[in-house]
Image (cartoon, rainbow, N blue to C red; front, side):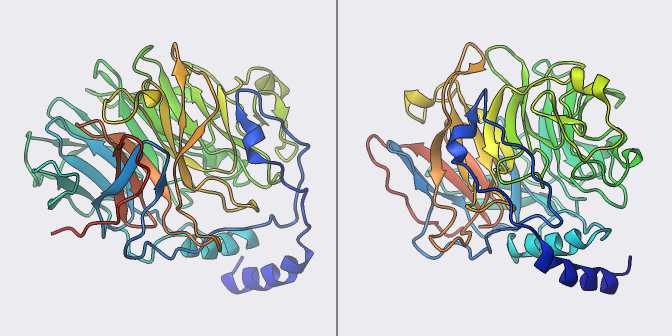
Length: 446
């Protein structure tokens, strides 16, 4: 289909796009047993996304009582993920994805919406090193550690090896503690699925507690396999990669877009957050957080939330649906979680000890909007034990424009929570403040 013809078809179809069901309160879908309405299929799905306006002078996110927030660094070019090094330095992946080909009229609209919902800054496609040498919570040093990367996202450090998950492979670089730039070209440890479409280009990465394995999150190449199952080979999965040889196996499958891979500190179990499928209504399908079982299948594309069959996928596979694992915890529909970290530090109040923070990038196909915040889920004995709590909000203005959008999370060497805000070009730093909840405005980087 030519671009001109696709635009013409889109213009003809837009007036025919049917209204869907009224959305429910998204808070009712938070937890282990979310209510799931009947699916609703659209000729064209509704699309509602916040245009990015950025942070004005004096503005900052709002935080829960007992916390304060200020900018560790501003003026970044699409910061997406964060890695804290043993010496306290902080790595930030500035990244954007490739431009996918247009196959359906919806993709023209989606491309336009995505441009509106992201920063106008050209992504850096590099790894930035931030250093707060005087400990005041503002990084006074900034260096380009690695440049000209291919859509970098996930990062992991094991010993003196730094691993970066680019969109098409895991790269390994020699790392010397304290260095601010890496001149060596690095070695590709293993190829990752990419190709012409590369629908979910972000590749999350973490290392096993013993350092022998890497785990990479590989998103699907479509919403629900509309590009054909051949395009989904080895995707919608978590790979386990041998850190020495680069050989890999499918650790878990049926995960539409797994991100925020991290090990729960008490049980040493792998967890992730997952962006589920779209175009079934404002309250389907819930995005979720889940522990990941070795060999587990989580439903995509044939079913969602366990055994709920997706009627759009043909041929159907009832035997696969019967084996689908139900996720641990719903975050509600279309919040787009992209970051996750467990908290064991001491800079935040005790109420946040041991649980998980999740960065919700925000919805594009739901009205009212959902997500656009950082939430906290308490844990007990290695499992979620209560409702998600809003911790960092205020990313969206009253007229539904986005000041910023949270992505990756990390905990720095002092126990502060770090938030990569790609639309705002900021890394935010959250600490405890007694009973204070006032935010501090961004500080300029010298």
